Amino acid sequence: MIAEPLHVMEQPGWQAALRNAVTRVGDLLELLGLSAAQVPVSARSDADFRLRVPRGFVARMRRGDPHDPLLRQVLPATAEQFRTPGDALDPVGDLAAASGPALLRKYAGRALLVATGACAIHCRYCFRRHFPYAAHSLTNDNRASILAALAAATDVTEIILSGGDPLLLSDVRLAALVADLERVPHLRRLRIHTRVPVVLPERVDAALLAWLGRTRLRPVVVLHANHAQEIDASVDAALARLRDLGVPLLNQAVLLRGVNDSVDALVQLSETLFESGVLPYYLHALDPVRGAAHFAVGDDIARALATAVRARLPGYLVPTLVREIAGHDFKLPL
Ligand SMILES: *Cc1c(COP(=O)(O)O)cnc(C)c1O
Ligand code: SF4
Image (tube, rainbow, N blue to C red; front, side, top):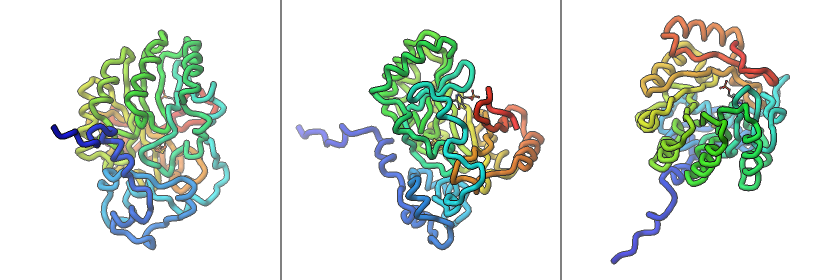
């Protein structure tokens, strides 16, 4: 008998796709048929927060278009080096809300666990792009103390897995984590904040569906897509697999200049999401994180866009436009 080839024993397919992500600006531009002279790209910005984008996401970009809305979200731009008054490394007061190493408590009834600092894609506007993940994420060493803190917080009924992207943890680790969370009697809901089904849809595989499908906690998945072009057939299929489990799917987007700051882009995003069974949840005003000011949309324009979207769509397809103000009891409608 011929021995099974070794690769059969290797990691799941999504981990290979993750390792194969584009991390060099030159490679990205070559794939898109662009030259460095056509885009405002900066080596300094890339060194501060490395380019990372899965090839499947690159395939949804328009070749030869330096203004592509997906490209703009990942390209390390020269403008990231600019400082603006009021920009911050921790724009939403995450560290002040940290109770213990990786658990953030801001809002009644909910606790947010920074499950990992890793992401499948590096979004240039990310409000946690400067977050000190090394000291503030789940590890084998702090896991027991995090669970003890949760067990003591009897008012918390919903645990939010966030990061980073929690779905970059292996299914073995996630299944064990969820099993631990299930033993906290007052927890009722498991919310997962993830961009992975959009940017690395192959991650939604049988192993993931297995632990998600059998938890006693009520699951809800909050996705992150900013533009209709992000949702292709592969994403739709991944979302269908989650829907088949009966998991409610919501989306949060960030209002980004040059990406989705038009009525048409926002309307198309909501309609495309709904075709994949996803309801729009939040449209976030950009957090003033250092290095992302070139994505900011003024409040007056943001409100005008939200009003115009409301005039075009059924109410259930209109996300709530919010801004997070550190120290406030909820994310504030604009
Ligand atoms: C955003 C956030 C939540 C969730 O807020 P919702 O309004 O329920 O979506 C919970 N905890 C923290 C720390 C947050 O930043
Ligand atoms: S996936 Fe989310 S956490 Fe990761 S870089 Fe993008 S916005 Fe930030």
